Amino acid sequence: MSKLIKSIRGMHDVLPDDSHRWQTFEDTIRRLMSSYGYKEIRMPLVESTDLFCRSIGEVTDIVEKEMYTFEDRNGDRLSLRPEGTASCVRAGIQHGLLHNQVQRLWYNGPMFRHERPQKGRYRQFHQFGAEVYGIDTPDIDAELILIGARLWQQLGLKGIRLEINTLGSNQARLEYKQVLVDYLGQHHEVLDDDSKRRLLSNPLRVLDSKNPAMKEILDNAPALMDYLDDESRQQFAKLTARLDATGIEYTLNPRLVRGLDYYCKTVFEWVTDELGAQGTICAGGRYDGLVEQLGGKATPAIGFALGIERILALLESQQEQQLDSIDIYLLLLGDACEVRGLQLAEAIREKYPDLKMITHCGGGSFKSQMKKADKSGARIALILADDELKNEQVTLKFLREKKEQTTVSFDNLLTSIAAFT
Ligand code: ATP
Ligand code: MG
Image (tube, rainbow, N blue to C red):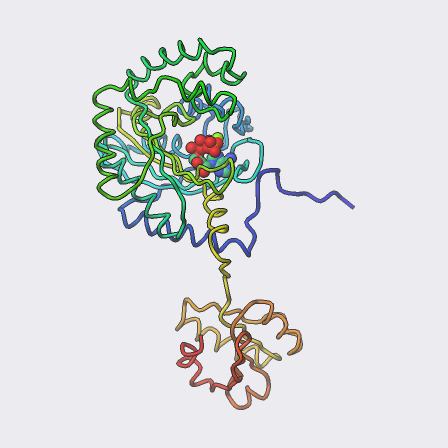
């Protein structure tokens, strides 16, 4: 026998009993984004490797060690997208969507990173992202945060904290970088290997370290807040004023720097303590320089991406199990009943497009059809056998409740179904 082929490590199937949770999430967020006037954009899963090197940054975990990169048959270097922002900017520039206009966009789909798979961390995972172009004022920063808060509320999620920080202008960050390098240089013996490497290539990322041995020196590190330029300081104050006014609670986390190179000014993360080490469920920030960096005209930009698997895991742990249940299972016994039953079923579907009804297919005895009806989880079985056909009626049986079974005439079926389901 040949060896069974399995899915790739860290890449998962969504099985039929779980897909309704994905759909609920997707329906909710789609409606929410549309209510704020955002439009969907869909980008390819594969892009030029260069796009990610030039946007995310050469010395980031993603580009250094997590990308799925390959040569295609033409010898072009391509990568599976590890995130959506770079593609969104690429598409925006390519189609002339960004210059001198405002765009409020969202996307949804799989991303690929070759990380060590563990709970909440996969190699194919799904992000929902929102990106806004053409607005440089913090009112839009506040809007994106409010959308997050409203999403948690609509999904019924509890215990999600907001952490915010500002990375300042490029100039301010450059000055701060030197101060940080000097400080960390004085504590070189405490730094782990990763941090020593980052100190040379991307010193801000050292602040992002989760290594407890370095906590103390990082806690005592000079804060970027103290080196801010006036404009960033004012913008940040305006943002917090808007969060205060709308009742959004937040904590200021001066060590929040985000893992990607393109961020500036406002950065934020929504975090939960209920998912262990993988506690960030949504992360975002401003990236005013990226459009120009990728060859477009300078355009202010801000966005967030949320990790759908992490949100669904949280939903599952916080909510009672919800079933994706069937309303009706239609049993059809014999060829004549199958033909008449199909007509009835189509008439029912015409009138009740949201009703979930399985029409039995594949024949079989009453007993075997009833077994399938029960297993389907349906609340009601409608039975059409020879006797019923002769009398122009169906038998209606409640599968989950203690209610008497009854018969309904073909003529009344369409009107009475609403009362039963
Ligand atoms: P982390 O610090 O957890 O690695 P990140 O900073 O790399 O996250 P982003 O690139 O900002 O994450 O992606 C936004 C969100 O996407 C994260 O907050 C998280 O919820 C989700 N995410 C990122 N990487 C993964 C992954 N490998 N598996 C599942 N979800 C992920
Ligand atoms: Mg990561």
